[in-house]
Length: 339
Image 1 (cartoon, helix red, strand yellow):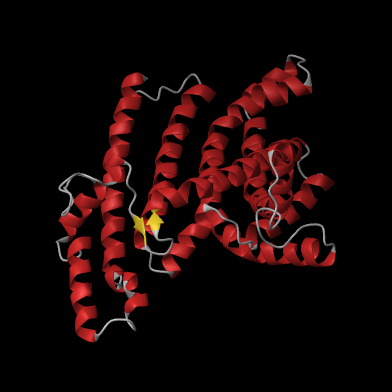
Image 2 (image 1 turned 90 degrees about the horizontal axis):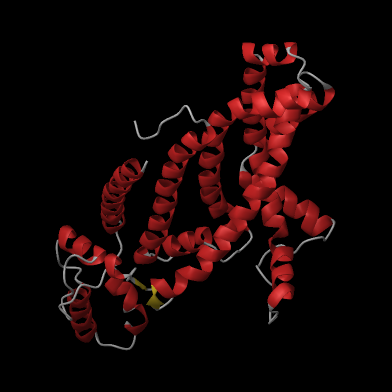
């Protein structure tokens, strides 16, 4: 197992380097000039020749005249900076400079990451707490009234885009019933601490969490139901019932454990997908998360900020893929992931 994990970590590093290089090239091909963005406020203050001189100096300081490979190496931290002559890149903990926030990217990201992770973990716990019992119940009572109603609702929920769900929920819960605020992550001007701050944050995040949970119920419920129906049709289930085992033992000890292997794949893949789904939700509800930060960086041509955000999603995907493979061996002892 240890050898397998080591091999996968090496694989993750190689993939991370390739993706980071492709993303770096892609964002540098976009027609934008960070030096002009930096000097935008000085255009009216300087004479044209002074502005052009300052512009050329800034391009040289920022290394924009170098080749794409040298700039990428400097960004990663394997090529020395022009001015200091020291390595100061991604490997040294420097994620770049945000032209929008006028500070290092590392000063902007931590609070945003904590908000995104908090929202997505909360949604995951809530969604799995609903979809797994509901999917199992619908599989055991196939073609019953609850199953038929659930199938209709899940098809509707699965078919509607997340931003449409968000707009409908805003109209119903925030505008009509006035149960939740429309946007924000805490009460404006508040300085709550401890439990009061947590409850205030949950109140503001209640509607976004509700939207993301509802949007994820359709696909997960249907997949759990399908996996359980297939497992319940196997010969070993008929054998277990013929032995006189209780139905709960047959369903949860035999059928559910054997249906868990394909479900684990979907659960982890779905957990990764809600991070990308939160990008839309965070922007809709004006939440200070990684998704909102990503869109903010794109709209303001702050590509070092965008690159750092993209690397966050890349790491989440790579770690999720590793956890998915390792979970096979934990769920089913017959699976040997090191083979």
